[in-house]
Amino acid sequence: MPELPEVEVTRQSLLPVVHHAVIKQLIVRQAQLRWLIPSKQLSKVLKNAEILSISRRGKYLLFEVANGFFLIHLGMSGHLKFLSSPSPLDKHDHVEFIFDTDARLRYYDPRRFGAVLWLGQHPFEHPLLAHLGCEPLSSAFNAKYLFEKCRKSKLAIKTFLMDQKIVVGIGNIYASESLFLAGIHPLKPAHQLSEQECKLLVHAAKKILKKAIAQGGTTLKDFAHTDGKPGYFSHSLQVYGKAEVPCAKCNQPIIQLRINQRSSYFCEYCQQ
Image 1: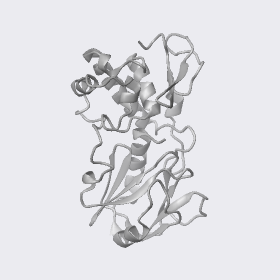
Image 2: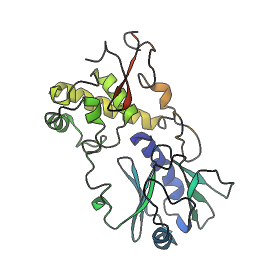
Image 3: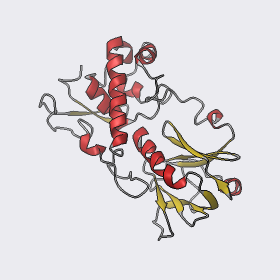
């Protein structure tokens, strides 16, 4: 699933080509994504609408037009493709925004777990956004914040870190990498973390996320930039997907186990 870095990379790559673009037509070829696309409503409100801004909240992209906002979520396997002119459709190109320049933005999603929804004029009151937690790259996500939240939870810290009501955008890949960098065992109960460990984890998460954004995100299977190119942070992964590979720090094999139904990777010697 695209996590915060992949969504932020998508946002940054769209800005130069879509900001101030005028939508001439919306074509919905498959409305049944995670939630049904309100095709008629979207087509009506977006006709001749200028995209005024593109922002991100967690893993959600928010597109502002004069009369409100629409949301795109990439789901498990989605990405957005910007095309300067018409080209043949791919099988899983479910939604297409056609601009007055004849350029187009296509939403591609083989597994159809993503979303394209109209939010109206008060996007942060929408049920998908209203209860989201802290942005991890903001100053609000700090050691004090994390320590106070951790004190109230007995969840394994990896599961806790992936709770979008606590901190947004950190999924399986970046939780594993952040915990490795901070030297914290993924099964350690959140309430047992010290203030110093929370400080290390916040620093690690910010460092990992910034590095991933700078390298274009992580492409494992489906993610691609809007121009079709992959992200290169997969070359910088230290533990994720590296079961039995020697740890870069101590040379012991990386361990894989299931935590809350998700594959997790860590070094049992370097992470306590």
